[in-house]
Image (cartoon, rainbow, N blue to C red; front, side, top):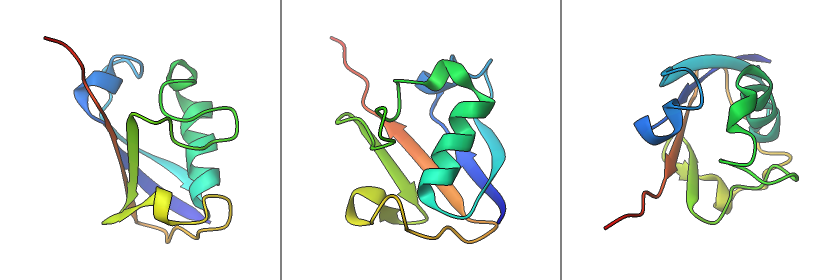
Length: 92
């Protein structure tokens, strides 16, 4: 298990004290998301649900792969990978 880089949009950085890029430990997508939430508890309920599945309006990518196309529990994440989280912004 190694460091995985997380990249967040500005809309979610308000819940991390303005931090948009950071690293967490994790060998699977689920571990990465769990450790991200441990590091920044205010993200809880804004990216994934209680089962660590992405919320309907959130896209989570490992490299170029949308995690919705992966088995979230078992999909390996290589050390040094980047996990990009994109959240839809609504407004008018």
